[in-house]
Length: 155
Image (cartoon, rainbow, N blue to C red; front, side, top):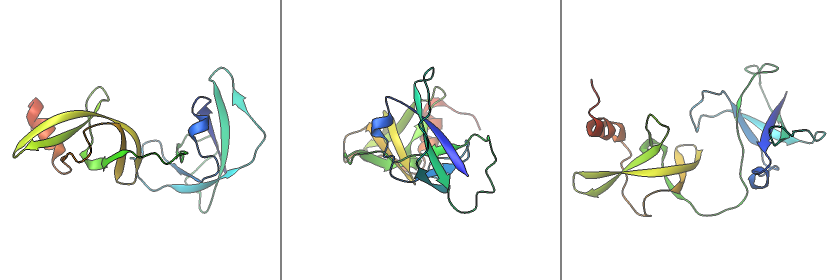
């Protein structure tokens, strides 16, 4: 079974089209293992109105969870090897507006909420585009409780 992946043309240069992709459900959490799909050569196709080009991947192994026409989530590898600040995915919180945050331990029993911008998630780690300084101590367990304490969430 093949999966068609429309890519915004502005992002195409950052995608490593020679590496396999990971295919999963739309509601799967980041880092959830999915099916492996290898890139395949296909006739070029695109959608000018959406400014996308299509990449195609063949799903290897048992793909009984997939149906023709089904929408799926696809994780692609990116080119390059630039260094990024990495935090455990468990440290990242989402607010009601989609903003992402971590809590930094700035003194004993003193925490500050810091805005972060997540670039990608791989397994149990999030690579940040922006965030605290390297070496900062971030809360990895109990961050949701701190968030609830800060905003007075009910029980």
